Length: 173
Length: 392
Image 1 (cartoon, one colour):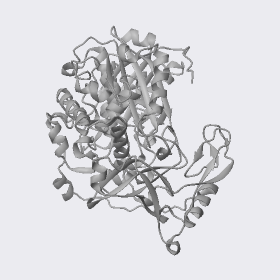
Image 2 (cartoon, helix red, strand yellow):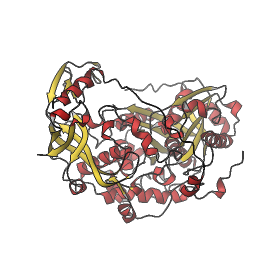
Image 3 (tube, helix red, strand yellow):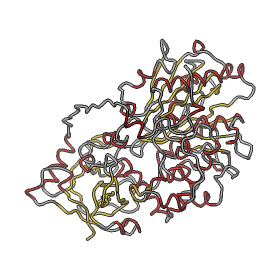
Image 4 (spheres, helix red, strand yellow):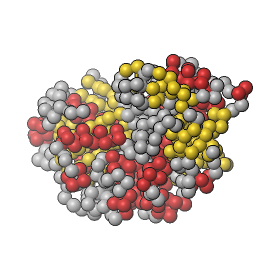
């Protein structure tokens, strides 16, 4: 096989050239019925009631949110359900100007990680949710939203369906 | 964990091969693997019949658009009728491939191993970004329509907030690596850029901008590893693999503080213990930390114990990690400068350290004499790290 690399200092094909070529288009028919399992089923049922449930390991005291039926550190079943607060601290927040397919968004979508109470700022692992945050782009850009206390804004009861989207976003209180 | 340091065979490196790293390469994935593998064999002075086993590395199947990529790449990688395995730990795969090759030899199972890593990302339309959708938790994360850059931006912002680091200081990594890549004949995105160029580039997910990220690329890399007696038969200037380490953290990334990669600390300490390194910041001469994003290089230099926590940006600013600095970092130009065909990029980093220790890095050769080098890769949901220590 000949190797033509030397000639190719730029990209072998420009986007325009590529667009002119025939492409194989195929949308995979890949639908899944994911099993929620015991822990996430209870978690989703909790969201429907406006509650956030976690699972606690009594041996090491770690609280899992989203819940897990076993403790990964002690490698034994977790012991009890506990309800954590729908309030917490913004650990990190970002403003996305692109969609999941990398299309440009006009107004940014703001998401981040919320460390839920009870927990302390000395913890390296903690109960937490990844979710949207209702705040301005400026508050993300100057980092002022990070470290703030936020609370979940729930959808109205009749609109909740047992999904992570039953929470609209987390907002500063 | 205490690794068994009484392994059976010492492992040396006999040769390396790379393809160009480019977007939209005309070759198939198998042809890319073939070019890299053939070059590695040529450099080693071996033929395929001399090779006992083959280790293939490739990131998610979905990038190349074919399933069972290990099997698919096997004939291009010289694997037909041989012991072949494919390893996969997300972005950390690239360094896991030589690690896996190492234990094939160190255990005494094989004498000569060909390791090959390949990725072809630019064929995914409209953008490989959509492929990453399936790495998220299907029930608690995917309904929020995340894209991959979110998670990096979240980690970067947490790191910046924790230590009060400015974006301008992080952008210096991109400037350094693209500058280093000018010396690398395989590089896709070399160039002299400034911090202002980075700061003025398109905002993707604040704080991540266009020039904070490595490009999507196609490419392949390969290496030949051999036991000590074979290595000494073929070369007078051997380079040895002296330590390996790798660990995986959980997928529950929101429940972990993202400012510090504890999984990398574990992997690095495992590799250092095996190599007998007690003070990494004094004993390591050159390093290739994984840099798909500019902040990641700094984050990893801290995880590798080369810089103190939160100190990497300050050392960078002082020129500590420049080609003529105390510990040159990413002399190849890294993923930011050379390109990021995921698995091949990690193996490229390992090869870069091999070049440095062998003294064949050409214009990339760092100024100070080098004895010990470290390459590292990282991947998955802020989870995996692989570390390899080499000496000449």
